Amino acid sequence: MQHYFTNNESLKSEFRNIVYKYNTYEFNFLSDNGVFSKDRIDYGSKALLEAYLELEGEGKEVLDLGCGYGLLGIVISKVKNSKVLMADINKRAVHLTNKNIESLKANCEAVVSDAYENVEGKFDSIITNPPIRAGKDKVLEILLNAKDYLNEDGNLYYVIRKDQGAKSITKALEEVYNIELIKKDKGFYIYKAYKK
Image 1 (tube, rainbow, N blue to C red):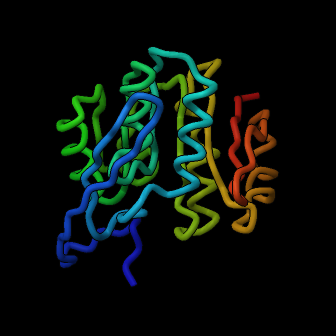
Image 2: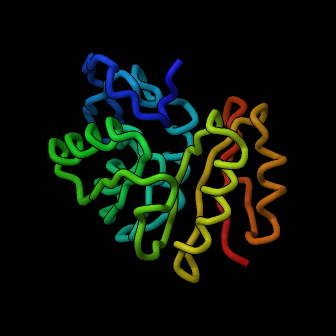
């Protein structure tokens, strides 16, 4: 089976629409085979996104790492009037994200990037639902290296299921971050981390 964090050029496209509603906003996203949570809004991503929207102010510079078809970054850009860079290793995901940026007129840019490989600059917030199936080393690379791309008072938001190592992964981050568990929702743990 091909995973959403690989590029499978031979996979046939089957476009579908996914609707996400937040307060008075309604977003219609284009999705396709070969991307994360292709048929519906992933519950962990939704919980992470809504925790961010509740806690953060407007006008931030944000990085959405592992953006999939663009849910987190596009919604943040529209609801919080923020400028968002979105990155994913999956070329099809980035292609979909660009289509969604265009159709939803979002202040975003999307790049193909293995973790931070093609990411430049510093951000007020980095948000990620890390690819657990890519392995713990890749997850730790994404979360630990976020500190190099955060502004001094910037923060990292991430979500991990309790049964997929939320506590052990978070423990490994405590040397470089002050970490706050901001929400528990159906087995998903949502964290906000600041550089020490």
